[in-house]
Length: 145
Ligand code: HEM
Ligand code: ISQ
Image (cartoon, rainbow, N blue to C red; front, side):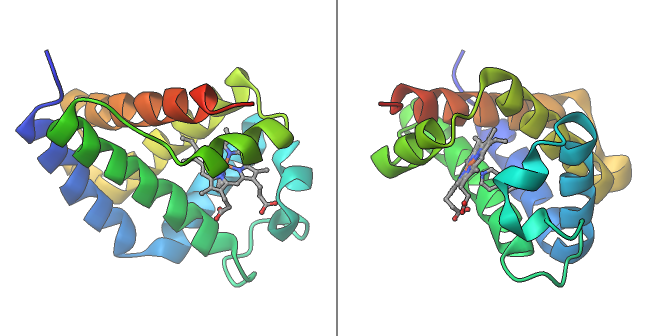
């Protein structure tokens, strides 16, 4: 079946939990990415000095990624399909982003949401984020030149 109203609501409410403390949740997010993909330190100039939430752009980039994933859930519920900006595809193609790196970022996102929501975590919540992320990632890859 398609993406349900309940799944959209789960993503929306946990996105608000992420937004409630962006510096803290961004540290969890980047730390998890760097553990599995140390190359992120060279891909993102703002990680050059480690994961410091005071570094300009660091929290902004994380917030953008979570916001786009949440938008993906909204698109899935409304239209059953996710469309990504062509520019988003070309940036990632240019940087040579791999499928394995998309999985690393997904796992870091799920870990971050898990910490943000605390005891509201469930398999259903996790699955809703996973579907929203996977569909967005597929849309970005489709736009690869
Ligand atoms: C740039 C989103 C996955 C590496 C960007 C930008 C966006 C974005 C919006 C534009 C710059 C910004 O404003 O942040 C996403 C989304 C992803 C995703 C929604 C998954 C669904 C990945 C993955 C990697 C990656 C898996 C590799 C680890 C980069 C790099 C840039 C970039 C290196 C350029 C950063 C710069 O130099 O400014 N991404 N991204 N992205 N992304 Fe992603
Ligand atoms: C991928 N693309 C853009 C921004 C990001 C921020 C954090 C982790 C991954 C990202």
